[in-house]
Length: 628
Image 1 (cartoon, rainbow, N blue to C red):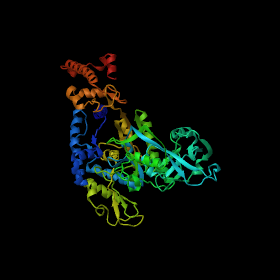
Image 2 (cartoon, rainbow, N blue to C red):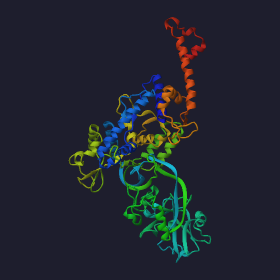
Image 3 (cartoon, one colour):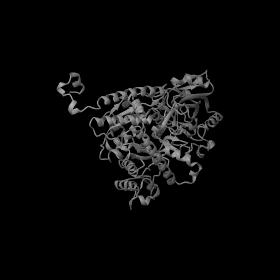
């Protein structure tokens, strides 16, 4: 029903502009690639998929998409939506796939596309990286632990009161499973830290503001502060890891807060964005002993083969055994989940492809363009501005089958990216004629021009990337694949219209691709509508039994009632629908219809040549009605 709302809103706008004398065009389209379709094909195949090639899976995905395009096209026509239904855009059409590849190559040419091992959202069930737009947050219970790390370096010269004492840095984390990947402890450069004598022969380093809460949690009452410490005095000092025979480096970072914990932040550069950034500054590796399934590798030693979330208890037990676990609690907090399978995701460092937000000024230029666009409602500007302002580099690679491959090559020896205009044009021509499958079917030598060599090391041996692109990149280049390719359309679009979740989706990716490669937003205005809810304002869900299908409404009341429902509501907020609302609208519709029949009946024998009243003979009220 939400899709029906969207399509009817678009149709109302297009028809109104046509009635105003404009050549208003609506080109319907379908995003055909991506995980939802591949998941459904996987379900249908079951065990049979194990013996199938990627090419065979892609063929089934294409057939699945074609089937539902035909079904949905008929449903949209039934809603009375006017558009180029016989000539829609499909992201799996060869020409569209070629455009996707070309736009990706352009980012490579300008230096924005790069490959790096960085922590990204990873779905262990779907076994792929995820973008910010593919993350949903739900309340989840997590174990939180306080762990002590023995300070190995002697600091008695700077702090005489600590001479001869066992000193521990104390951290707090809600992800015990990341402790095996710990490489550092972060302190805030401006916070006040203190050395706390526990009265039990140990000294804990904590942020001054958090001492009382922490010591209460640890069960210590007879404690005393014996030294004030500046974070800078501990920078680059070394601690012993509580589980392994290695060191954890003390680093400084502005991401440390006093909202909870100890003021000393557990740092695993392979499992957190801020951890990675501060670790990079100090030369720490993006260490992640976790495989694609979310299970520990042999690098994690005791926990090899264990699924990370299930390993929490074992990790805590091992810390307890080693005398490093100070306290354990359970908390409920907002945790990221996969938009498709609804399972919790992890941050995991893997080699991925990214589009830089800052190397070529993409972030700065996008923020500037946001202010040029008319956002309806106005709060849409603040929402997307904040998202662009704070987002990380765009992870555009996915480890799945159904999508457009990242059509780039990198050197087998030095891993430098190989891309030039000749290669880009050749890829575009190949995909336009044969589709994206050609990339998977052909060898590197058949895809590259003869004599291609690495500009950096001179090698002639290259690897073609087999990861596919984020489907948001697919939809995000629709302005290039549709607006620029059709003579009856112009760039930029007058209006983009979708639900308000698309500030992080289509509006977002379209802005980045257009500004990145064309220097301007692909739309002059953006209109967002709310979601459809039931009579009580609850989200529609099959489990709640409150779903209303548009086909059922049309069968019972007719498409006109559904269109009247859309036109009679305030699209800016969530929109309610129920049987009672539809009945009321049906009554109103009958009055409108009967009035029209009455008027048409009165005009049945009206002849304008005989019966028309000259303008000068009309009463003033009639002249006003005619806008004269």
